[in-house]
Amino acid sequence: MKQLYLIMSRKNKIVIFLMLALLVMIVLGESTKKRINWYPSFAVKHKIPFGSYVAYKEAQHIFDKQLKPVNQSPYVFLKKHFQDSTGTMLYYNSDLVFGETNLNALLDWVDKGNSLFLSGKAFDKELLDTLHLKTGYYFNTNFDKQLKFNLSNPHLKVLDTVVYHKTATSPFFVIKDDASKDKITELGKIYDKKRDTLYNFLKINFGKGKIYLHNFPYAFTNYFILKDERNLAYFEGVLSYINLQKPVYWDTYYKNGSRTKGVFEYILSNDAFLWAYRLTFIGLMMYVLFEGKRKQKPIPIVEPLRNESLEFSKTIADMYLQNKEHRLIALKHIQHFMDYVRTKLHIDTRKWDKELMENISEKTKTSYFDVEDLFEMIDFINNSEEIDAKTVLELEKMINKVKK
Image 1 (spheres, helix red, strand yellow):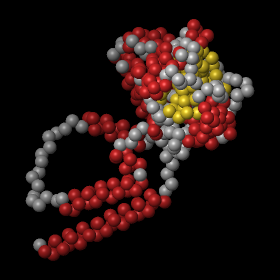
Image 2 (cartoon, rainbow, N blue to C red):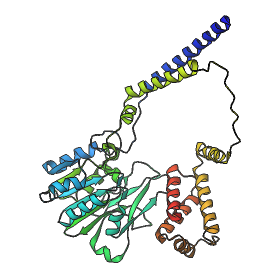
Image 3 (cartoon, rainbow, N blue to C red):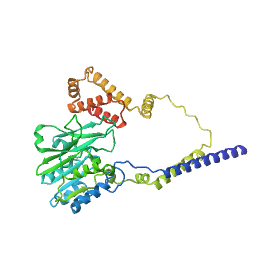
Image 4 (cartoon, one colour):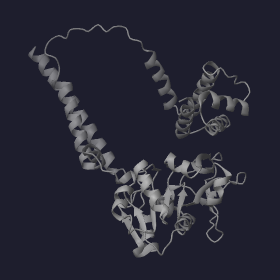
C-alpha cells in the first residue's frame, strides 16, 4: 500500500509539472500576441478601431469653442438647461433608443427652434412613426465591392466613399407617405445604379426646428475616418450641415463604451487581473482534481432514461455552425417558415407573388412591408452561394417579427 501511494504521488507530481509547463507556454504565447479590440465602442475616449477619439478631435477643430460635451441623458440635461440651451444636440451610436421620457424632452427642445442630429442603425419606433418614416436594409450582394455613399450637395459629394467591410448590410430610410415629403430633404444616400431611393441621410422640419437622421454611425469611428481620405471628406461633409454659429452639444453618454462596467467586466478587461483570475481558476481545478477525491467507494447512481431529442438537435445545429454552413441553416429557417405558412396559416405557398405576401400579412396581422422585406431576404439567400452568420440572425429576426 505504501509503495502504491508513492507511485501515485509521483504520477501526480509529473501531471502537475506538465500542466504548469503548459500554462507557462500559454502565458508566453498570449503575452506576445497583439490583439485588436473590434468592440463597437463609439466612446470619444477610445482609440480602438470603433471608438470615436479621432471624430471628437476633428469636431474640436471644426466647432472650436462652440463644441460642448454632454455626459447626461437628454431628460436630465434639458431639465436643467431647457431655456438657456440653443443650437444642435448630436448623438451617434450603434442603436439610439432613448425611451419615451428622453425622446419627448428632445422633441420639445427641437420644436422650440433647435436642431437634433442622430446617427444610428436603429432608432425609437415612436420617433420614426412621428416623422412618417421606416427603415429597410440594403444587402450588398456584390462581395467584390464595398458599399458606397453619396452626399446630395454637389459641393460635398464624395463618390466612392467606402465602408469598413465588404459584405456589409446598411439600413436606409423609407418615407411612408407623400404628404410628409414636403418636410423632408434628402441629404445623402447609398450609391446604387439600379435604386435611387436608398436614403441614409435626411433632414426633417419639425416644429420650428430640424431633425437630421443619419443611418451610418460608423462614419464617426476611428477606423472609418483614418482608412481613406474620401472617408474623412464624407465625415466632414456630414458635419457641415450643423450650424457653426451656435453651440453643438456633443453626446458622450449614449455610447456603448461609456457605460459603467461591473467588477467582473473590469477584471476581464484588464490583462493582469484576467491572468490572475485564470491562474486562480486553474489552481482550484487542480485542487479538485488531485485532492478532492472521495475517500470511500462512491455509491453508483442509476440515472433514469432521458429524452435526448433536444441534445440531438443541439448537436446537429453545432455541426452546422462548426462547419460554417450558414446558408444551410438559413435554408432550414426558410423551410420551417414555409411549413408554418402552409400548416398553421393554411396558405398555399407554391406561387410566390404579391397575393401570397398579402395573405400572410392579413393572417399574421403583420405589416405588408415587413412580409415583403422577409421575402426579399429569402430571395437574397436563395440566390447567394454563401452568407455570413449576421445574415442568418437578421433572417431569424424577420421571421419572428412576422410570426410573433
